[in-house]
Figure 1: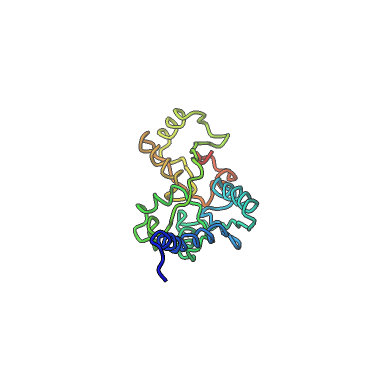
Figure 2: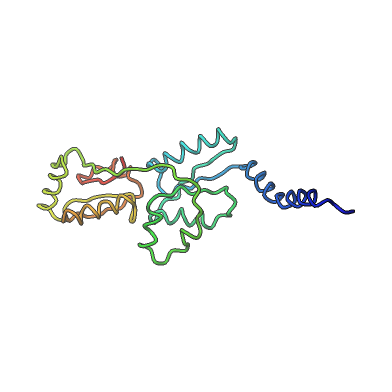
Length: 206
């Protein structure tokens, strides 16, 4: 049987498109089961709240459960490595932040390469950092804090959500720019700082 050239080209084009159509069909069917959103921070922080709001919206929109799972520790490296080692099937997602980029310079022996092992999907939010103090702390403005810190070197603690976090890096930049000496105390969550009764400066998320 001899096919006309035009008909042959139509059939060849259709055959070539079949794998792409198959991939699209699979993508349109996603998800067919529960999806985990791994948050590499402790519960009740801004990243965790974002994940739960997003997970609820995705569950309602896509008809499958999006389950938030907190795996904090090691400046987000524990949660990141968990996702890297999970099957690359789209059913284990990672909600990342600036520590993922910072950690590459802080930890020389990571068991993963973030740029190689994690594929970005979407940018979600921008989060500013603010500095707050306990109500009993004598300083009420940034200049007052700088003056007090210089008069009491090493006697003020500043906390963060972990080594290498944006709050940690922001505080280190502040110290370098102002010449003050404060002691860094990393927490698993900034809410631990809020709940504590330390009379110290807290550098944290708004």
